[in-house]
Image (cartoon, rainbow over all chains, first blue to last red; front, side, top):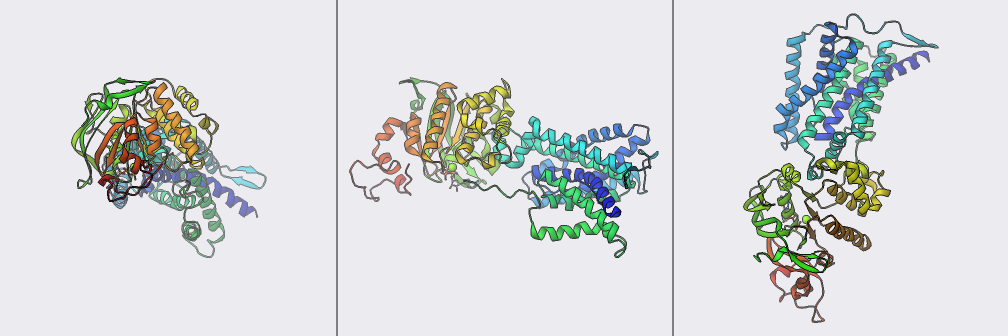
Length: 294
Length: 283
Ligand SMILES: Nc1ncnc2c1ncn2[C@@H]1O[C@H](COP(=O)(O)OP(=O)(O)OP(=O)(O)O)[C@@H](O)[C@H]1O
Ligand SMILES: [Mg+2]
């Protein structure tokens, strides 16, 4: 029982961070219909950028903020340089470009930061877990979760209350209608990439802080794909529920199934679950089925 | 084609001459570089006036509006000949963004609300191009003309009624402070009472806010009541244009577009001119 509750709680905490990365996928998909397969590398870049600043003595929170800023700049640059000229091209072509970007980023990352696992030194959070009754929660998990939630709230407020947030949602709903009142899809795409870089980058930094940083953080970035699909590719609340579900599944399968299938069950199980889930709910929990209405 | 006739505009009960705000000269439009849809359309919209553009399905009405607003380019269409002038400036080569910035706002057909946003959020998106006055002023103005939208302001636009959706898209266009509004079939698929409500508001908007309107309609009777002057488009060509009073008296229009025949019985379709030999589309 204790073990179950602990796995569950840890799952929820990590799931919060997955949700952040999932938000990146969702945003780009929602606004421009592109599944960005370079998302894993974005996650990794975020992790390394944060680490780099942390290592030269910038406080962790400041490093995260710098990562956010660099995320915006990179997001806009990437969209402008690689994707802007592809507007209107077949979706498969755009998908291939994101695959290309993925390899391109991977190369750059290995060139700058190498392939060795690196850790945040000195550790940011004390290793002493927080104990509530019989439950022990590691501080890294708790703080990562809290930070993820704060960012989520900020992004949600941006979408709900700012003019640009509304314009982005409008474009996601109907690009031509948005254009008819002067909302430029090009700007919206750039904004979507900027926010995706921000959220995935910070997600990466938090994941890297939990497990250490190497190329596998990039795979964690890919691991949230089930979370995104689970939540419905274009649903923001879905990204949260999906992320947390994946976190829980991962931890529970790690706890209970690892003894039978040692090794990668933790990574594989969420994908297997997703396949089965998709058979029954192809739109995910909250994906849009078109609202039909006369 | 009828130079200057279109400059007549109804102010109260007198017709005045006013300079056109928009001029189309022999506009030819092709989709995908080969599909010729508009074959030389010329029309004028007077400052402050309402002009109706009538025609059957597929005549090219929406294409005309898209050519003006620049939204044509989204569908790989292009003005291949002729010119479109807005306030004396040629705009047919400009992008939809530039054209909307100049104040031409098209309300596209089919009530294209942002279905996951609330009514008020839909309106706020329309405020994107506002140059003067706050979004709040804009909302107040829209709610003044569409009190129903005020009641529904917090409802998700995908789930309100068709009439309310139509009001939402017109309101959204108003938020942009249009200098010219292009309305594509606002009556489509709505109940008669609602249509009347919406058209009363459109008329009021034109009178009180002095917004010039180009109105595309299949509901000919209604369009001729609201607009003092109308053009009839057929197969990509203008076949007629005149004041609404005259058009209402025109036997062909009466017979074919209004479904009224002076001779008691229906004329043989063989005698009906080419542009009338189409599916009957009544009020
Ligand atoms: N994107 C497009 N590509 C190719 N052809 C098109 C396109 N849009 C419209 N057309 C063609 O152009 C012609 C005119 O279409 P348009 O939509 O302008 O007609 P309409 O008068 O608005 O008709 P409706 O009353 O049905 O809305 C039609 O024959 C249509 O098939
Ligand atoms: Mg049409």
